[in-house]
Structure formats: C-alpha cells, structure tokens
Image (tube, rainbow, N blue to C red; front, side, top):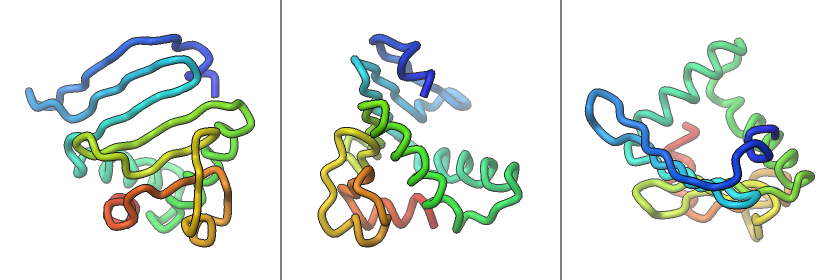
Length: 120
C-alpha cells in the first residue's frame, strides 16, 4: 500500500470528457474516493478483471485482498457514490452482517444495494 504511505494530504478531482467523475481526498492513512459516475467505476473494474483474465465475479476477492492489506497497514479507504459511503475497507471498517458475505473483518458494506450494483 505504497500509495497511502506516499500521499500525506490533499484533494484531486478527475474529469472525463469535461464531466467530474471522481473526487479523491487524502488524509493521514485515509483515502476517501467519491465516485460521481458509477459507470466509471464499473469500467475500471471490468478492465481490471479482463487484464487479469478474471470475470467480474472475482471483484469481491480482489476487494477482500486489498482490504486485508489496508488493515495490516492500519490504513482506511472509503468508496462513496455522490457523497454517500458505499464501502469502507481496511482499518476503519466495522463490519456487522457484511462479514458473513465478505468473509473478512476488513470490509464494511455501508450500503449493500449500491455495493451490489458496483461489483455486479
């Protein structure tokens, strides 16, 4: 998780074709990603899965692996859609029933409906 260690603080916005698609905010050991266009995230997940020769059903396994690494590093990543937190990964995750679905205590699904739409 070198990215979290390298970044200290700040904010970045990503625009695609003149439309704001992503807002990234970094603070100590915490990255908040606000995805303003869910199709943008789906495309990233699809391209990542194809590049690794996996189907999109492997997305949860990849997310679990990242979350466990973040927890070991005592770092947190939140992913939101238009300001509403969908999932918390890593150290800051406080899972309840989502632990049954994800099989890890490093993922908190804050909004199950949105999460399913992202990884499906």
